[in-house]
Image (cartoon, rainbow, N blue to C red):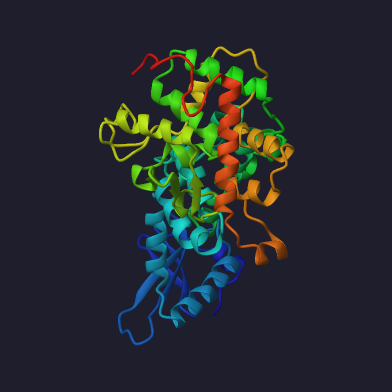
Amino acid sequence: MRLSDAKVRALKPREKAYQVADGGGLFADVLPTGRVVWRLRFRLPGESRQEKATLGAYPVHSLADARQWREQCKRQISQGTSPAAEKRQRSAELHHTVEELAERWLQKVVEPARKDANTVRRVLEKDVLPVIGSRRVDEVTVADVLRVVDRVKARGADMMALQTHGTVRRLLDYGMARQLIQVNPAAAVQSRYVGTPKPRTRVLSLDEVGQLLRALYASDLKRSQILAIHLLLLTWARKGELTAARWSEFDLEAALWAIPAERMKKSRPHLVPLSDQAVSILRELRERCDGSEWMLPSNRSRGRRPLAHNTLNKALAALSLTLPSFVIHDFRRTASTHAHEAGFSSDVVEKALAHEQRGVRAVYNRAEYLDQRRELLRWWSDLVSAQAGGRGNVLIIGGRGPGG
């Protein structure tokens, strides 16, 4: 006879455990402690060995829940999947770290479907995994999520904090879909409490560009950091593209820098023509790298790793400047603004910034504008040098600088 809620509630413990069937392999296992646990007997197609799967205890799982679970299990069994084995796997996954879950999410979900997979990976590796990567997925709390986003906000990057929060939320949504967690703690942190989306509009005037470079070369920053910040200004590259650059990407004789797709925001390789000033900076950096494969090797790792992603931000913040607040990423907007004002083609400027066009125009315009971009960056480097007090490809500021 089938069970009813009243019959289940009336089940009494005995000296030994006993079972009461509901049909279709589902039964209530009544333990001597009085605990009632839902289980299912089943055989996989073509197998003679009987297995058991466990749902959980009554009344946390009602009779209706148990019957629904039985039907789900039947569908799995018909496909040759053991519900018991799947539960064991989920139980093992429950103890996975955030880092392990992130790698699985990237491989199974993000990389096959999203065009911005590299961006998602960078967000995780830069701002999420260093903070909570070693935490068990089922132990992540709202406080952990706040620690992640607050560290990003602390460097004045509200937009990046919003993007990071969104990435954590999607990651933990995947954890819920895999039944590793029951609640997503990132969902409890509403976006309006993380930051307000405000597009940055800061553009440095040419006079401010000159002030910046003079302060930079007069500072006590390490020479390699001074040169790196200057190089960012000249090449229009993103900070992460520069700090993780290898010498194998550069052809100084041809004055070209080939950035591989995996480091580009849109996952497409990008070729940067180098001005004379940029080549001069790169030649000095190569002399200083002690044979490291990295253009900007980390001193702490003795050249085995590149410079930490946030080092240049800290270096810029350490400068004694009286200029209105700005960040390194504003260099790209500054260069673009002055180039447009000087009459350079928007197509050429956008290609120099590695911005991809959309819509019909993107379909028909596949030009790389390499010659025009070379002329653009040569013009920009000369203009920057003129503001800073330089002549030709030699910057007449400071000297070799302290810090080696």
